[in-house]
Amino acid sequence: MKRVLVVPIGFVSDHIEILYDIDIAYRRKAESLGIVLGRTRSLNSSTSSWRPLQRQLKENITKSKIQKSKCKVQNEKCKLKKKALFHFDI
Image 1 (cartoon, one colour):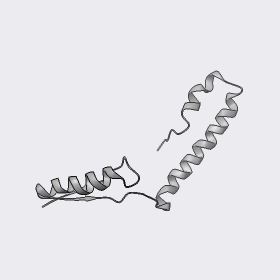
Image 2 (cartoon, helix red, strand yellow; image 1 turned 180 degrees about the horizontal axis):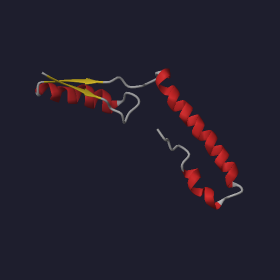
Image 3 (cartoon, helix red, strand yellow; image 1 turned 120 degrees about the vertical axis):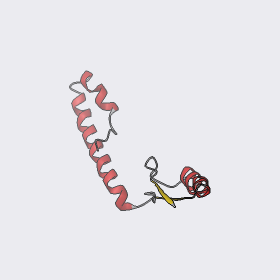
């Protein structure tokens, strides 16, 4: 018997696309094909899972504030930087 583990990386919390599509519809289809379908748990409200994202977000906001203060002096050069407030380099 084959086993498949689904890791829905596009979603950080449970909602209809996970709870119904994966847990019910896809699981039924997999079972009809003789496959056991499992899914990793979503982050939901797990504090330890959200801390790295929270740190990165705070760091980006701080960088943005510094960039904005520099923009007052170099207005034209900073237009693109303002648009990249939530860019993550992972």
